[in-house]
Image (cartoon, rainbow, N blue to C red; front, side, top):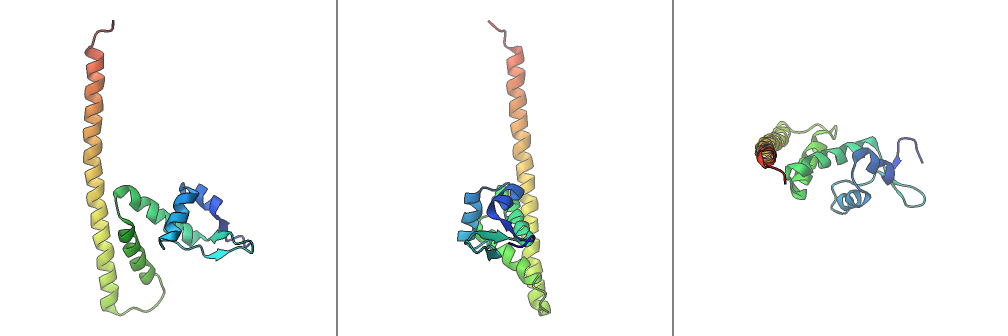
Length: 134
């Protein structure tokens, strides 16, 4: 095994994703191991880890697997090293801009939810300090 390849256990530790989750992402085509060992074990590269980190960051923002796939396809195409027609390149960049805007909106929504949750927790804490103990 090459030093540039990692087995799934190391990838799981680095990405903080479970083996099951990584396998699920493989089954859905979001990430494909770069190679297999002679024994058939999945082998991943730094590029595969980076791809899994994109997925991991999208998940808590509520992006669907199809949305993740669409973003990854756009970034893969842009990063292919191939000379793209300007119209296609602009369309891919526009797609990524859309994801960036959606991510910003979802972050703002989460901040609002967190603020409300903190207010609620503070209200409960205040209530407990005002209640005489038996």
